[in-house]
Length: 184
Ligand SMILES: [Zn+2]
Image (cartoon, rainbow, N blue to C red):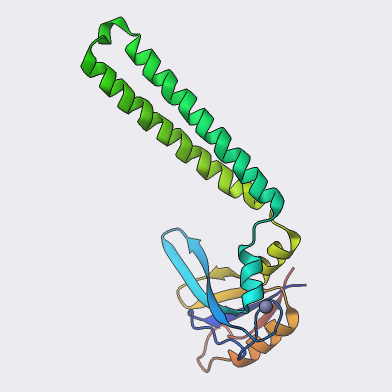
């Protein structure tokens, strides 16, 4: 069961030398990010090399899916670009050398836009094919919510969350920092 811990601002103090996912010695900080409208909250979180690799790993299925998707995106982009080029240059009103150059540029532009849109569709889709281990490492800690004064972090590891809450007891008055809220 996951636990949430609220801290002041974005200055999180992590239990010394422990990876958030496996609790073995950490090697470096990984920035976790949450975007709310135009506001971005970033918190550096310690992970070990193995868990960092796990977080970034692509499953064989994900790699295969991305490869197929890239080939299909290129084919689709080329087909749409060609169609734009052919329909412009076959228009009798536009028949001139200059129009053909513009038709080619427009065809290329449309092909690039199609490819870009496909990329934006494919990337989130391919994340569904992440392995269970990668998903677990990514869920180890996330920023659940934040506002001007506080950040709420959600930990998958309850033991870690408790240690984290202990070292983050802030002295100020306010909505009890370090307060643990059970996840509904
Ligand atoms: Zn680790």
